[in-house]
Amino acid sequence: PKGDHLDNKETVAKIKLGRAWANKAGDRYKYFMVFDKNKREGSYTLGEVIELISKI
Image 1 (cartoon, rainbow, N blue to C red):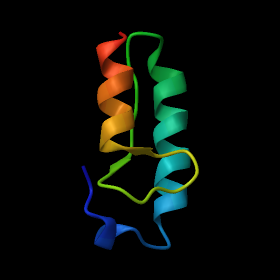
Image 2: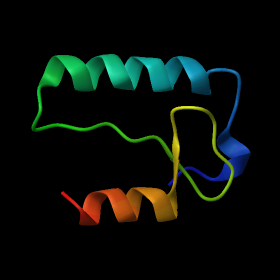
Image 3: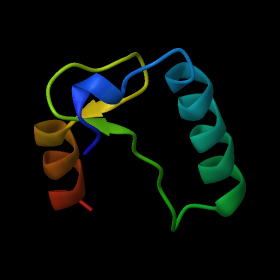
């Protein structure tokens, strides 16, 4: 996961780019931007992504 201190003004653009990549890559690929605790819209906390991956 990214440390919360790495959240910056480019984070939102990177989340959008990651989603676009995942959409083009097909159903077998996923993109997750993961933060330790704090998150931006479209990103996940470490706990959330662990739960999501466990369901795949």
